[in-house]
Image 1 (cartoon, rainbow, N blue to C red):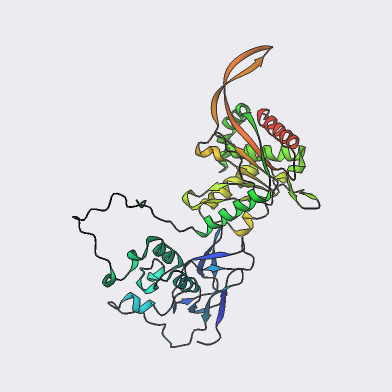
Image 2 (cartoon, rainbow, N blue to C red; image 1 turned 90 degrees about the vertical axis):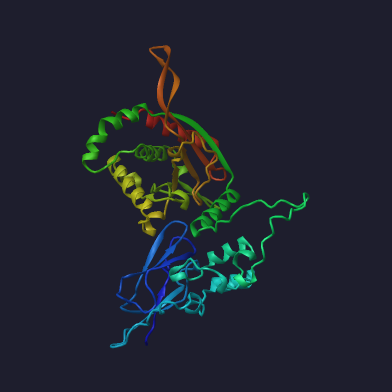
Length: 402
């Protein structure tokens, strides 16, 4: 094959680096321009890298588990020579190590030098049994006796031999290698708490008016394909509160506070054990309530389906952590999504006994309420601004028009 064409990691990817997760084509397979070739995972999205041209996948330079900075060459495509057959797959019965050992990724080779482990002794979990960096990390964590060749395995201790009573007890455990998303989240959270002094204010919000409005309108919106969630009300109330206290919609700089005109609200969406992603509702100040509800439904559904584009997780100016959906009443402090100045936490909505004055008389009532918190970067904002913002936010919810 002549005229090899590079397959490169996107220059404008979300995050400073990505991790190769899965090659969708094998060396020797014919590809068409635009065909998905390889999946890259960042801390926020998993995206497919398409083929830049027609041809045959000639080289795979970065394997599963390798880190890919923007612009890194992942592999190469060669022009398809007429009459030339793609390389044949190894015959049945050929040892896997013989077919695959000639090539290990840079990450695997680096781990081999660092850990002193021969990768040919590892059973790979990558595509077609390839050894990945995660396999090397796991083998190192398990200890040398787990991956040594059978001929070098140490004999087991006879049952009749009793260990000394004073022998140090080793705790049984296992290590789970971090995904690229988990490692990036960890770094981002650590940066936030070491950069910004966090202060949290907590209010209680009565959702009675919101509940009545939702009950009266959810059937109508459902007929339009919109599932009306409580989070849509929260997003809309955030927009209202931002208009009252715009400094919350900001970013701290050493010489100034940058206050944004556009209110781009990110909504934290849990992905189970995989981590968290924050799709962004851009320019929420220009959307109607129904448009906010529809946009929220679309973004969260595609977030859970791993179908967001990088642009849909960029540009947030404020974030909502709806932690109450998993049962917590209060979480504080919620770590600020840097470089933003504040983050809203919404606890579990549940019925509580409250005292309300009606016609001058104190009454005991049962109302749907939730604790709401605003965690601020104390460099950018003070407590009175946090309280003003929460006051307006709660008033918007409690006086929702019917």
